[in-house]
Image 1 (cartoon, rainbow, N blue to C red):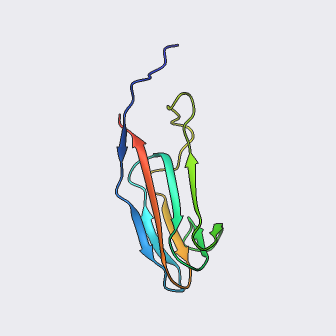
Image 2 (cartoon, helix red, strand yellow):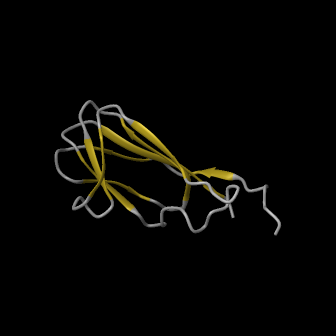
Length: 106
C-alpha cells in the first residue's frame, strides 16, 4: 500500500466567543481538523461541551490551552477526527475562549 506523504495543511478561521455566564456558542467546525487547539484566554474556568452545554466534555482552568494532534496513518486518518458541523459551546463567567485548527487539503 502506498502512503501519500504530500498532503498539505490549510488554516480554518478561528472559532472564538466571549463568555457571559450562560452557555455560549464558540463555533462550528467547517472542516475535519487534523490538529486542534483549545485556548481559555480568560481568568476563570470555562466548561466546554458539544451538545449545547448539557454534557461537559472538559473544564478548562483559567489560562489553560491544550493541543490535540489527531494525525494517524502518517497524517491521513479519515476515521479519527471531529465531524464537520461539530458545534462547541462554552460556559464561563467571563473571558474569551478560542478554538483554532488546521485541516488537510484534499
